[in-house]
Length: 329
Picture 1: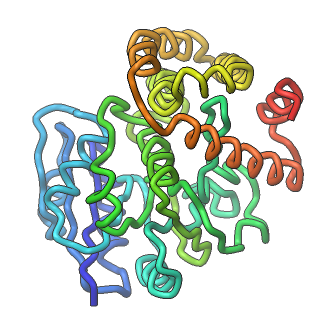
Picture 2: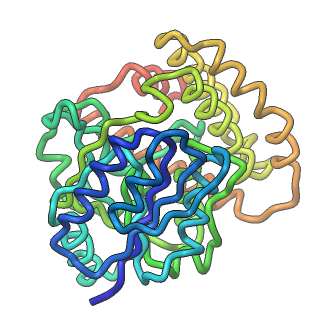
């Protein structure tokens, strides 16, 4: 049996941490180690982790999701690395089902079906897709579970809410980009994977339940700030000037609609502040010498086509209806 290292970044919410550790302990796949990276919790999270037999890495302050995951990867001994949010619980055969698919398909990473913990007939997510304008869709979010979400498929993006990666991916690409701090670091990593030729599988029979933004709060101002900021940084990091110009209209439309989405949920100012905070770093990143801009455009263009196909088959969300109408795709 291969060793699976389970990496759980955590910040407060000892109750949620206790739940995820309990579900990890009930897995049918037994060869595993558990690493909890504590981001300066002020509650009993460290004691909960230690009592469950996990290795605990302690930060004195909250360094963000990306740095916590990176520290967990550095400490991990497993050939496969399972990254989990602290607000998920796993069905007992989750790891076993992912590894079965990995052994058959030879893929580099895997993601399962994510259901809402408080409404398990609704999807919290599956796999991610991203537009040329930098807006990521957690595919199926908020929709009823349906046959389309029970079909295995090849994927480029595995949401790090819960995802299994072979160590070779990190050995080749290095770790998560800590400049994102929280949100979109997994989207960035997925784009890096796609550009390098790594690929994954969506395994719908592997199921997790997710509370969703339990640490920062659902739809909190901080969530909108970091998401808004990091959408811009993602594009500036991966596009070169020519590719950015080619995608200029989708970028303008995508980012304006993202601001409107923030306004719809009462967080226009937080979203706007995130965009403004990104301008300086994004300008420097865009003008830096880089390769891979055309490849990034190609990957995002194909991903956007997949978004449209799924939206057409399921019925358009308002954001995507407006986006595709305005970009003329």
